[in-house]
Length: 445
Image (tube, rainbow, N blue to C red; front, top):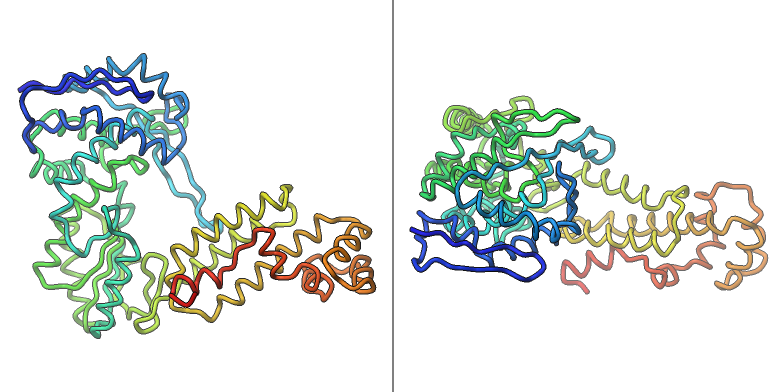
C-alpha cells in the first residue's frame, strides 16, 4: 500500500501527492501523520505554544526557512522508517518559592511538529475509550472538571482519600510496557518504530548526550497522550473494582468510605502499579487521609467546598511580590500589564474556589503594593507633592507625607496616598480586581 508523499511547507506552499488507496485506520497511520493538512495544523499548534529551540538551535522564527531546505530529506526518512529524532535539550526550570528545580526536555522544533502531528492522529483513536474519570490533557476536559467530579463524590459521603504519588512518573515509564499498549490499536510498524525512537532519543545534559532507556520526554507534545495510554490500564482496573476516583495525568485520588478500606485499596493498587505497569510509587508521599487533609491539583477541601491550598496561595503571594517589587526597574504601565496578565491567569484557575473571605484582603494588599511602587517611582518630595495634589490630596497632608522619612510600605497606607491614589484611579491605570473576577466567576456580577 503506497503512502502519502505530502510536503510540509510552513510558509504555505506544498507539494501533495496523495495515495489512491484510503489508508486503514490502524494499519497505515503514517500516511495520516504525513498528510499536508495535519502537518500544517501541527506547525500552527507548535508555533502558538512558542517555546525555546532544541539542540540544533533552530528557533520558531527560523523554522520555515529551515524546512524549505531540509524537509524533503526528513520526509523521505520518515516514509522509509529510518528517521532518527534528535536528543532533547535538558533544562532546569525553578519551582515556585525556591522549592528546587523541575527538569524538562526541549525537543527540536521539527521534532515537536512531528510529535504534534502524531498526537493529532492518535488522539481520535485512543481518547474515546479513555475513562470518564480521566481529565488530564484530553479534548474538552480540564482540571476544573476533575475537581467538580471529586466534589460530587464528596457529596456522596466519601470523605477518605487514597493519595498515590507516582515518583518521577515521566522519567520512570518503561518504554516496552508503554509500546505494548500503544500497539493494541496501532498496527503501523513504521509509526510504532518512530514512537519507540522518540522514547529512546537521548538527552543532552551540558555537552554530553545521555541515553534514555526509560521515561518519556517532558516537553514533547506526544508525552501527555502516551501517559494517558499507559495509565488507562490503571483507570480500567479501578473501574472494574468499582472505585470512585479522579485522575489528572499522573495525579490520582481515590475516594473511599473508611480508613480501613483506604489502606486495602492503597496496598492493592500499589501492587498493581509496580507489577503490571512497572511504575514506582513514592511511599513517603502516598497516604490514606481524610479529604480535608489532601491537596489535589492545587486545591484542598473543607467538607465539599473547594479552597486553594496553602502552597498555591504562598506561590501566588511570592509571584505578586516579584511583580510589585520596588527594585524592578520597569515602567508602571508595563508592571501593571504583567501583573494583570498573571492575576487573570491565576483567577481563571483558582477563581473556582468557594472561599470568599480572603478575596477582599488580597485586593487591598495588592493595591497597597502598587501604591508603594508609585511612591518609590516618584522619588523626590516635590514630585510626590505635585502628583498627590493633582490627584486631589489636601496640600498639608501631601507635604507632610512627601517629606516623611518613614518606609515606602508604611506610607503606602497613609491618608495622603489613599485619598490620592484611590481604588478607582488604580483601576483606571490598569490594576484589575481579584474580587470582581471572583464575583463574576461565581455568578454574582
